[in-house]
Figure (tube, rainbow, N blue to C red):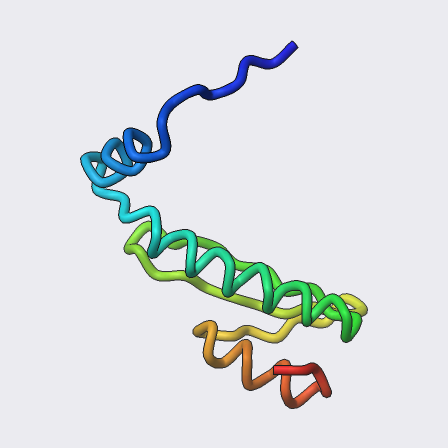
Length: 87
């Protein structure tokens, strides 16, 4: 049986900040990406991302084996509107 993490949420946040990670920012970005990814799925597309070593992110949409490079999350949002998705 897996063990539960019983750490207090405030302790986890302090630990994340000490490790150079601002968890609320990461959570907001992750949520925005997950929402956009779900909206792409409703249109029959898959949205992917890669975290580059220099700290940037690369996005791409895919459908039927065709891929469209999207340099930013804003570009992904614009492409979603173009394919008829709800923004």
